[in-house]
Amino acid sequence: MARFRFEIAAKDGAARSGTIVMERGEIRTPAFMPVGTAATVKGVKPTDVRASGADIILGNTYHLMLRPGAERVARLGGLHSFMGWDRPILTDSGGYQVMSLSDLAKVSEEGVAFASHLDGTRHMLTPERSVEVQQLLGSDIVMAFDQLLPATATADEHAGAMERSMRWARRSKDAFSGKGAIFGIQQGGLDQALRRASAEALIENGFDGYAVGGLAVGEGQEAMCGVLDFAVPMLPAERPRYLMGVGKPDDIVEAVERGVDMFDCVLPTRSGRTGQAFTAHGPINIRNARFAEDRDPIDPGCPCPTCTGFERAYVHHLVRSGEILGPMLMTEHNLWFYQRLMQAMRDAIAEKRLAAFAKDFLHRYSSSRGA
Image 1 (tube, helix red, strand yellow):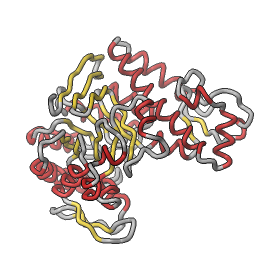
Image 2 (tube, helix red, strand yellow):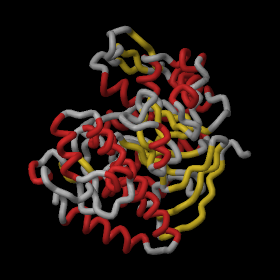
Image 3 (cartoon, one colour):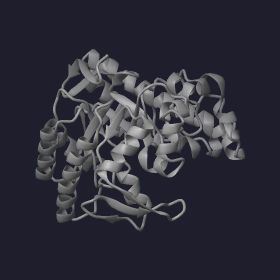
Image 4 (cartoon, one colour):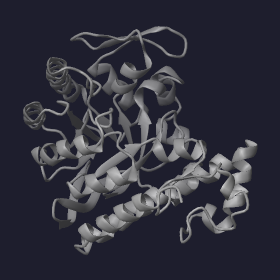
């Protein structure tokens, strides 16, 4: 079997549907990757994540290198065996967490020196170490190490971070063993020229796939979509395009229309743990008193185990009572919602009706939000 192959089956405007073929299985695109930060998609067994329709999950380099440690995971047979997930895993590079979780991070050309958020111990994460950790974990798709900035950063700061990220991308590619795949990450904030320069540098290095990084950091949907309008076409059409960290359902639909193939976000699982469920008519807060005697399922028509087995009133009771089963049921439903959305878009692309699907979905999702 090929190490990595991307097959585009259908196109509809800029949108594409297809398949990523890898040793551990095929990934249908557009694809949503549930986040398994610490070797678990929180509150859901791997078999149930798979049952929701997920073909691939995301693991986190920063958290796993600190606990339990990449070398330990390798000694225990790798991340797939460790967590009981036998399908593809994409690992992020750790750059985002280093920047966001450590107040003591110091960036240099070598990499990022930081203090662990767990115990304050000092660490150094370089492009070479990031790739090493990801390969020790047994990652199927390795991400190049990059520097992420918030939307509020200055133009000079974005330019400097982009240029450094491109030098780190080259070092990441050089450190990659060739097993599985490696994706480069486009940076440049909201600036079209910086995005162009970033894309050109990545293409020159030659990656298996290309990610759009540095969005969903406070710029808002309109600005994000504006960047995608020019940033996505800069990336090779024959390779997968991955929009990192973007996970609101309406954002995903907008991005698929612009040619994005892969997504990840903690939103469906984190929301499930806090009482928010996603429905065809927008998110609802199951903690609200109006659901105390509601006999409907969370999302009428949804075939997930939560909706076919339980009423809103019961899930409301569980969540309000602090019972563990409540967040588990909510999370399972949310994962099914996301995977059903991805399948609906794959079908719409194949049938060349994505524009109509998107218009209808976005209208329903926003018009009755919270109902």
